[in-house]
Length: 106
Image (cartoon, rainbow, N blue to C red; front, side, top):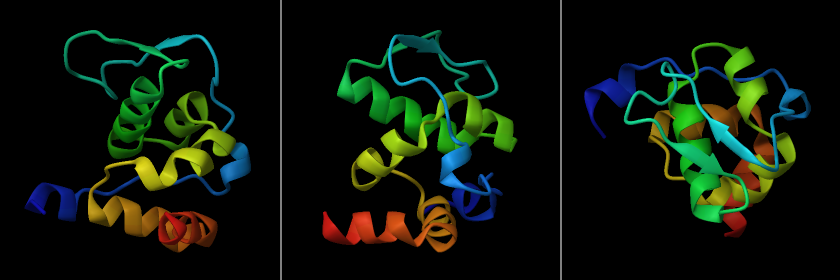
């Protein structure tokens, strides 16, 4: 793990139920979340969804960022597949033990 990932503060929602982002269609993330070349995420494509969720979780600056782009239902389904920095994964699993259980079951 690099020092940036260890020191970066990660934004968390207060509840997974407040995450009511899109589950269909396409999404283009704002620059503060996805600062690479413009990319349109197709939510019908599993690989795109996984990549978008990883980026939003890593780069979200406010709970509103999480609420706008993540779905609590979809996050629960994808959790074990997401490649996240250990501090981010640990923070989310500490707040939401159900995610830790999903990761352990995978």
